[in-house]
Image (cartoon, rainbow, N blue to C red; front, side):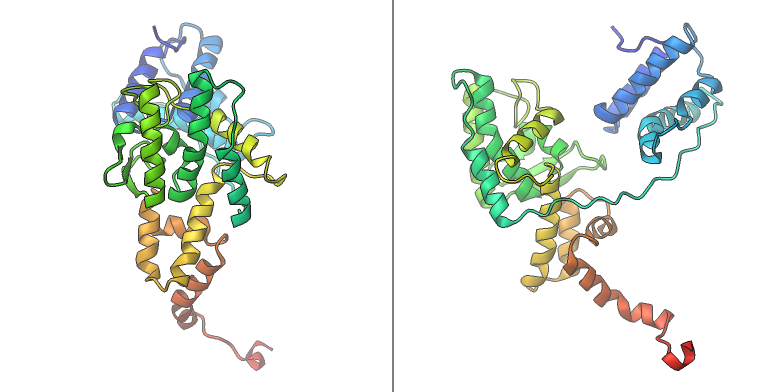
Length: 324
């Protein structure tokens, strides 16, 4: 039975199957917003089986009080759906105008080594109310390993949550990341201490859920939700500090610590940035630099060193007398 209720349900289903086959579908953002658009079409245009410009214009117009970025998130799947139909000659509808993205002034929490120690101590010492259920035991065993994996590998929380057991090579320590933001497969090599933890965790989970699908199982065939990650991170972090922090910031911490380490150890900065970019699943080094330029002081210093000469050739210094 289709989860879509409008007269466009068949088109929506074909579109979703195509995007999933291309590994370009996200249930959280795409799925929810397409479902909301379907509900709107069913209510405002009951029985209509042809996509009309009026449907698009009404739904995709930026709402009062809605930020540009929120509007983009809400309508982008609809824009993608229209392009899908256009490429197949199934519609002449015009795509809506996408608002200009607003630059986010977001500064993540900078974890100190002491904060991280206390945080992982809290994970290690988590005590469920009832040790006799698999649900509570699963949480107890998962917390120390899951959050250490985020910290030590720089994985996105979604990548870790949806990590399949078959994609974790516990012999070599190589993890294949398939469910990623850029829709391109990349690889992460685990630190030896993390690999030991992953092996121990795998043995425990195998006894609880033999032949499970996901490395961090929420039952035999499912994985933990974003809400689960946020809830338990908050619960552990509350024992450490009252400062606001999010689980995704462990990924930022991974990037910043590595960038600082490149200089301290005298490594080739260019090569190291390439490795870091690839391990984090970025499509280019430029994205890594752009994301962390303002967060890692050492990165800005290196970029200035590498680019200052060329910049000065284009815009030479001017004497004070000439300025006056």
